[in-house]
Structure formats: structure tokens, C-alpha cells
Length: 486
Ligand SMILES: *Cc1c(COP(=O)(O)O)cnc(C)c1O
Image (tube, rainbow, N blue to C red; front, side, top):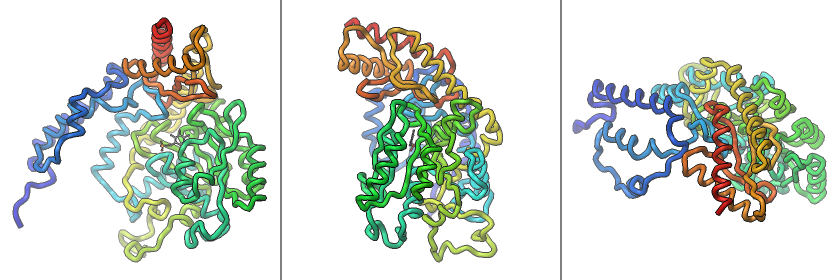
């Protein structure tokens, strides 16, 4: 064999010095995040380098690669760690959870299964969250990469449990067309999942919402009855805690009653909203009421859990529901009485779609142990208070208009100028939004609410302070006046 340069550091002392520099500079970067713009557009030269660099056939060394990162990458992310980032729904992360991710990658275990501590760590955080969400001790769960993944797996479990025939063996063709019911405000994961699972988009029966953007439950019941009469096979009811547009939460008690009456699976998408279960807050209590009656709940920890991407949880009321859908028997994965394949641990690969699985549980476990779930709940409650505060600022300002109720942590509003048509107002507010982003002042995102373009502020950010919302309102008023004058 020829003597190759190692993949590990050739000189550990030299690499140790570089690694310490990386850590120190990363901590400075996080400590000083507030001093930087929320978002910085990439210069053309950076864009070109990232697009056009040829395959690096021979390496330039660790220090040069780190310099490339500092020059080309770190200054130009989408900005979600910033205190004035409230776009879409994203989380912020923290230095401690970033360090936990590093420690996880250092140990680099395969958490698909095996008799090992990392498996028990994941099982423990799943149990803790099951308890926090009001699920029984028989509940099962798994960490996955995001809300979309947790929801699609939940829908697959629902399909296996309630199709009425053996979908795993026979496939969808062996029975009538399956249908699932969710409001028109349901996040895009449901359409994608119906397509992905082979149900087809038309399997998603879109139920109208009421004025407060929550699902019209009697309308859902009527659709289910009509579909049954037409020979379709309803299998699942979807409720949302915290819709992506306005933060509305469906009446989960009524949906649970309906699902029970109709023998349907009840799945809750609580991507960010489920985390309200941790908050000592009346609005939060109201949002999650009835969630403990769901058959499955999906929620992100990388949004309102403030952890770095990507991590989310799927919980099922019964652990068996997960293995009924995902367990497979492979000779090379057979359990043994002793050794690494002993059943001392829980086989997570039998509870989801992935075989090899990362140790994302470590950042969940370490931050829960370090900070406690009470503090997490207090920050979630503060975000709800901040949304109420922003809504108060908007209501107090005649040039601003609130476009939807604010039941949780999302605020939709716009700038209004006299003498502008509906289209002009939409164009004006789109321009205000883009200018806020380009100037680096703040990053809300946009949406359209009943025809009106809305500046949408989703607060899942533990770094935001009250004066950040003052700055946002001042920025919108300044830009609105400037642009309306033209
Ligand atoms: C963000 C979100 C999702 C999707 O979660 P990802 O982690 O982005 O995949 C689903 N539903 C709602 C309500 C969301 O806000």
C-alpha cells in the first residue's frame, strides 16, 4: 500500500490551534449577531465563485477551506439567527445547541438502533415530549428532519391504521380511493404528502375556514358524509395548532369528537404551535386544547424549540402504530439476545423511513437538561406577548392596518395610504417588505390574506426584544411614507 496523507489531521497540534480559532470566532459571531444587518445580499463575485469553481481535485488544506467559509459563506446566510428575523417560520438556534451538534458529530453514532446510550437519549427526549404534549406512557415517537417529514410519516401511519385493508402488502390499488380532511389553511406539507404517498392531490379534501381562519368542523363532517356516499374511503382528519398564515388553531376538541364518531385517524400538525403546550399562557393553553386526544402529533424543535436545523418530532398515541407502518425484517438487522444487536435499545429504524440516523437527539437532551423546559416555555410565552405588543403598535397607528386576528405568535399587517387602490396597496406593501429586507433592517415575509398583501411577522425568536418591534414599525412607516409620496 502507498502511504497516503491521512483524512484525520496530519498534525494534531496544528489542527487543534485552527479548531480553537474556529470555536472562538464562532462564539464571537453569535455574541455579536445583533450588530450585523439581518440579511446581506451576496456580491456578484461571491455568487460567481460559488457557482463556477471547478472540482477541487487536490485540496488546499484545512486553514484555506476555513478561510473560504469565512469569506464566501458565513456572511451570506438567510439570516434567521438575527433578533429581527421573523420571516416564514424559522428558529434561531443557540451557541449551546450548536456545541451539542458538534459533540454529536464527534461521537457520530448511528441511531438507527443498537444497544447504545444515544438510542436511550433519543427515547428519553421522545418520552419527555410525549408527556409535555399530554400523551400517555404507551406513546411512541421518533426524531426526524422537520415538520414536513414528521407530518408525512404521520399520514403514512394513519393510512396503514385506517385504510381498512393491508396497504403495506397490497398497495393503494386494493381498495377505494382514500381521502383526508384538512382546512384550506393547512400547510403545503399535506398536498405534497398526498402526492408523495400515491394518494394523489385530490385525496386532500380542502375544508373551508371561518372568519378566524379555523376549520369549519360541521362543513368537514358534511364533506366526509358526502364522500362516503360517493364510495370514497375517508381515513384521516387533520387539525392544525398554529397555521402558517395567521397562527390560528383549529378546534381540536371538536375534531377529536368528529374523528372518534367517524372512526378516522386524528393527526395534528403542530409544527410550531404544539410548542405552546410548554408556555404558561392562557392563549397558549387555548391553542393546544384537545391536542392530547390526537392519534399523532407532528412538531418542529427547529422552530419554536429554538434548536438548530434540522430536528422535529413525530409522536403517536401508541408506539405500535409506528412499528405497524415502518418495521421491516432484514436478516442482517436481526435482533440478538446479546451484543450490539440486543434489544436493550429501541430500534428507531423500525419507526420511520430512515435506516442510518444521526444523533440529533443530543442537542435536544442537552438543552433540556441545561436550561429546563420551564425556561423554554417562558420564552415561548414571551414571543406570544411580543406578537400582542406588535398588534397593539399596529392598532395605534392610523397608517397601519391589522389583516388577521393575532391568537398566537403571528402578526399580519400592512401600510395603508389614502387614495390608493387595492392593487396599489399590494404593490406598495410588497416594496416595503423587500426594502426592509434589502436594507437589513428586519426580515418579515409576505403573504396574501383575503386578497390583501400582508407583511407577516412570525415570532419564534428568543433573541427579539420589545424595541426590535418598535424598530420594525418605525421602518415600515418610514418606507411607507417615502414610497406613497412617489
Ligand atoms: C413550517 C411548517 C411545516 C413544515 O415544517 P418544516 O420543518 O419546514 O418541514 C408544517 N406545518 C406548519 C404549520 C409549519 O409552520
